[in-house]
Length: 110
Image 1 (tube, rainbow, N blue to C red):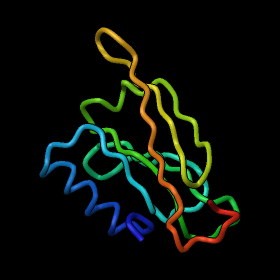
Image 2 (image 1 turned 90 degrees about the vertical axis):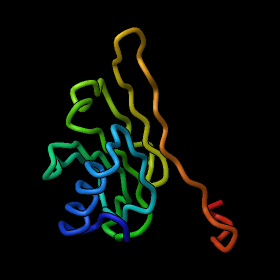
Image 3 (image 1 turned 60 degrees about the vertical axis):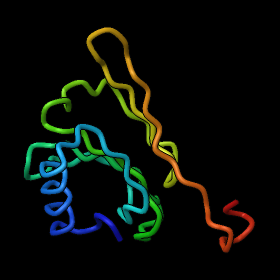
Image 4 (image 1 turned 180 degrees about the horizontal axis):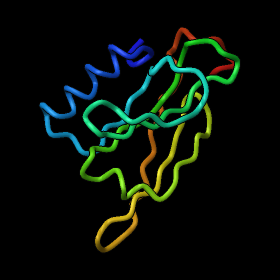
């Protein structure tokens, strides 16, 4: 699991600072439900996961402290897709974070 506990969220915030990342899409978050969380470095983490409580699948994105106020809206489509709208100086930007099931997944997931 990538960010399913607080120590992994802390490591994520440290990496965002180290690599100077403003926007990062993340798959396999393994976080149930939908929500937002402020990371220790001031970045915003937004996620969409399963609604049945299982800590599997999940997608999300982070916005750095510098650009987090540009978030207009986000839509948690499913545990595999999340979209966001961001305001920039001249245009609005749409972001999609998604991933497809692997080949070994059951046919109903494909």
